[in-house]
Image 1 (cartoon, rainbow, N blue to C red):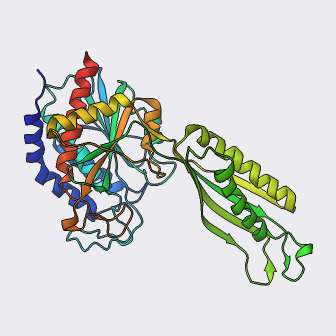
Image 2: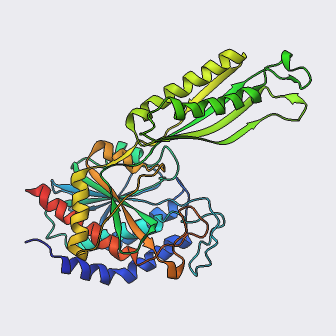
Length: 398
């Protein structure tokens, strides 16, 4: 017998006060990527108290929650658990108590929805036609991220996961609303470092030196031509240099410069081509100017591409729960998300959850020290995620 929407809404409402308390503790005690030790312990303790089986992985932080783990049909819910190196300036009574650390991207809301979904589905586990894996994943904010490491740990196997869901809060979307989009939603991220090796000398005698700063400056300008002249303008690419370091004093020609950059694209072909185009441009400039170089392509994230079928489960759950409310279309962004690694392995969907509420000033952008999320979004997120999982299990079971 199918679980009805009234049950989901009632349970979500009953759980809401507990989830707010859970969220506020996490918000007060944020931890950075790969340092989420107390966060992991806190989540693990709460799940165990609710008699939800947990599994610690070989990773230092993060964990797996399991409901009906032996059932053949499985759906996964992924939640990121790390915070950012931001000093909170919200003035909230439960603001961060750790200097220079803040949940400025809403991961505390994500964890609360994940925990709420686990509580709700655990109360209905005898009626569930399958099992659910809850991935409390570390280090989304810090490439190479925790997703690929969790996949290597086998979280999508034994038994195999048939569908995976994730969400991200959206401060431009009113609380109570969600947004979805089929296909590319978030960009591939390719972080890279360039070291330019020149030959130092006196500022008055540039012909006897190889000016690493001049070479680096030429690189910065030429690399932008990769975007404007070597990629399809209908398939966006952006390349940004965040830092440049070199030189010692004004009258000495620098012999070494280090550039730190990032390239983003919503197109998988461009993601594969960009490292080659960067290397060709850099090597050509160095050859022409008598310099040498080292290019380090760092770990990044693939393009996040939602699966149409998975999106339909999310959309159907939302409409079934909340009637005729409009579902917005997610606008693609050049931001990256390592949820994309899961979607390279299995079908799934990543949707946006509205947290905007002008009355409480919940309208500031992600990563802002003034970022506030409307906690009522936890209720909506828990209900939507829970019903989407249930309907997915019912469908996969057939």
